[in-house]
Image 1 (cartoon, rainbow, N blue to C red):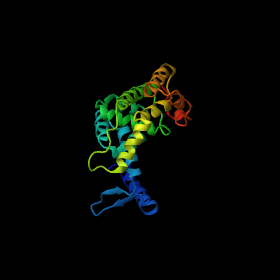
Image 2 (tube, rainbow, N blue to C red):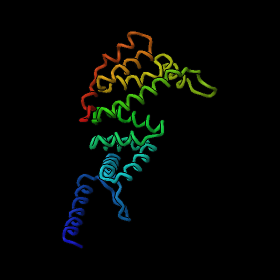
Image 3 (tube, rainbow, N blue to C red):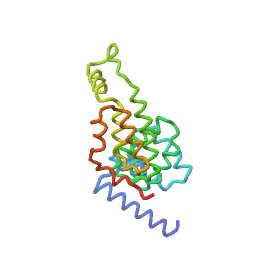
Length: 215
């Protein structure tokens, strides 16, 4: 073993001992397997691994996390460290549902990440598709055996419309000027109420500046 390897091994033992005995981050079982006490540390390690991985490994990682909604924070953490992860994920999220899940994660974490204009426009296109699909929905009422709670949510959706969650996300995107007309058209299509059309334009945009990328 080379001197640098011996030094790294000794340092690793000290680091582990500090985090385990002082901060209590990891648990070591009888076989020497480390398990994080908090999911946050597992997500952070997951994100760091992805950023340092090879291209093929990154693509495989993206496919895996998009199939596992419990790893949404891993995606957000990876994007917060490298905004190119968002572009890569959108490029390889060919499954419609997986792409929609990814856009939801990115939109809901917009105060913690930065993405470029191309990514933002791709997100808008996905939100437009979702809003248009949702606009065609009409509540059928509770089926036999369904609870009143389900129907109360169904009735609320009938009042507000299921498309508005996607319109809200689209309205909060820091869009470049060339894409704002598409956003405004979406709002107008979803609701014929002039007040509803104006409302998203007036929503405070606390998420917008952090999401603006450097592209």
